Length: 329
Image (cartoon, rainbow, N blue to C red; front, side, top):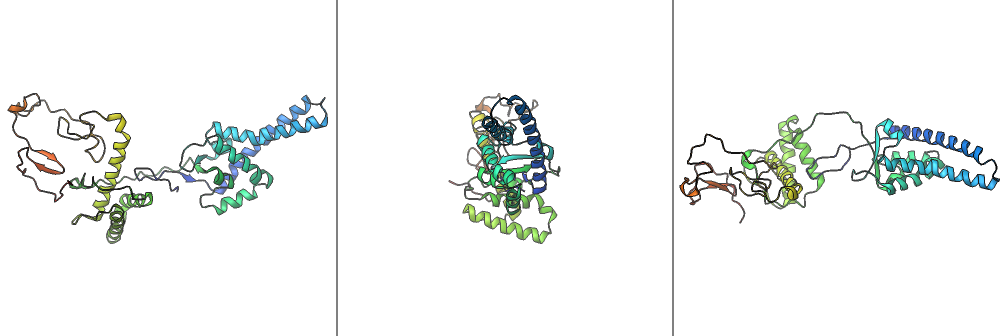
């Protein structure tokens, strides 16, 4: 499995191709290229019969370079890493970051492939692919590319369980910039598989991951919070920040989308840990005392929620249990 991790701590489903499938794809590409080279050569021999030997030799070299070197480069560039052999084997060439390749990537792979595939009959490419942890040949190393499998078996989707409701938004002030992608991935893998683990083993793993996460964030785990719930709440907080960053330009300026309270008292992207929740219109059978159309001066005093603690507009505490969380100043 590839080590690429997205901002939501999700590993990209990019499985590096191994030597047998890559060798079969290369053989198919070479067969097509050689067949095209022979056909073009036969046509040029008949068309250049009146030329001298030097001219025919120059044309033969040019045809060799254009068909056997330039052809694969152009095909990989136009198809974004999918030659005929790779399409047949379900493979694709991508960049190290998972993006599609461009002309410069295909050019480097094609030029080095002449040496390690054509001139050495593939011996250098096989040795390099066997030595590499991700099956890359020298052309992939210098070009910064990776051959991955496109057709992978469909598996069951793993979902990160949500944290308890009383932990939602509690870690909004944590500094998550120092947490590496590897730790995010380990936390997510634990959360998706913790129900399959032995309770004692799962608890010890959660404690170790929570300690590592607290060390990276610089804030200890709050007392009384189970480590698994702490991990789920922090992962959800990171996903909420990524969602706010992604939708910052598209939903800024709305009353329910900028993080302030909307007409129903809920929050938008900035206030909901799971992402944007559209405001819900009030039911039609609300009494007139709480209807939004009634002037503010005749409405009863309704407690509002600010910073995670329920308090009245006049400073009187509401009748609900406290979570023990004090918002930062």
